[in-house]
Amino acid sequence: MQRLASAGAADMPHNKRLMPVLALETSCDETAVAVYDGERGLLSHALHSQVRLHAQYGGVVPELASRDHVRRVNALVRQALDHAGLKPSQLTGVAYTAGPGLIGALMVGASVAAGLALAQGLPLIAVHHMEGHLLAPMLEPERPAFPFLALLVSGGHTLLVSVEGIGEYRVLGESLDDAVGEAFDKTAKMLGLPYPGGPHLARIAESGRPGRFKFPRPMTDRPGLDFSFSGLKTAVANAIPAGADDQDRADLARGFEDAVTETLAIKCERALEQTGYRALVVAGGVGANQRLRARLATLAAKRGVGLFFPRPEFCTDNAAMIAYAGWARLAGAGPADARPEYGRLFTTPRWPLEDLRPPGYNRQ
Ligand code: KG4
Ligand code: ZN
Image (tube, rainbow, N blue to C red):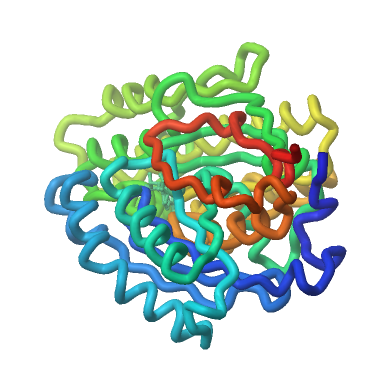
């Protein structure tokens, strides 16, 4: 089985690196387009956030998301190509997020990607959204070497993953109920904060007093690497005093954030112990949380392991991470992968990360 020895491109022949891939991300409420190649790195990235569109409903409305992707996507493709200084004919592949995500939203990106690939005779590369997240640190100058432990914390997923190479993922632990981002968002809503609640909750927690509210660290008192966050949300609900003021809300937010952060840190430490890995990658929207970043930095320093984050804008949904994953898959593709059916057009709301295979796997 062929494997990219490192996700860095230094050990790859020049012609393999110089392959600009354009990618589309439309799995949820961000329309994003980016161009990446292994020689020059990220050439452009353009993004339109639908946050304001959905805010009035307190959450993402799938049908509105799809329609807005349709409205925005072509202009963003043009913008990404312009910034990269490339014509469509100079691309070597088109990647798109095929899942998991909202099916109508995914289909917008997939259709545009397929149209562009067909018009230019280019391979079409279906990318797993969470693979994009977990490879996002590869867009930074300091990159982790395989194998590493990845903590993926987003609105829909909470996963601890053993990453042995691109497409070689073993899920060590996951949330049995709410994802961390979901718990942030629901708790924020209870505290009267606007959607999406995560960043708002983090902001008010800044003026919260630690220790006033001590919430449980779910599932840390028993072995294993799974998570459960729905009870924590209920614990916060039960602790809200009647007639809560801003200071009460800030204290509750701080107590919640500390409980989540501590729980994630305990499980990361356990997983590092279990695997013996020397690097920890943290990605997904909640990876933008400063308190989590600081707590994991302390853990990494204590254990002497490397800690790798994407920059905060590449923690939340973006196309740069999809372009990287698409490029890595194209660059590592074997002869069988390069056949036209490799560019199969599909979208899927659910897609287990462990179903992925490394690039070059389809050798026949
Ligand atoms: O990865 P992402 O952009 O979308 C999904 O694939 O889900 O993650 C979005 C999630 C939301 O739940 C949002 O509230 C949370 O990430 N989030 C944060 C922060 N920034 C985004 N949660 C806590 N603190 C933050 N600073
Ligand atoms: Zn995401």
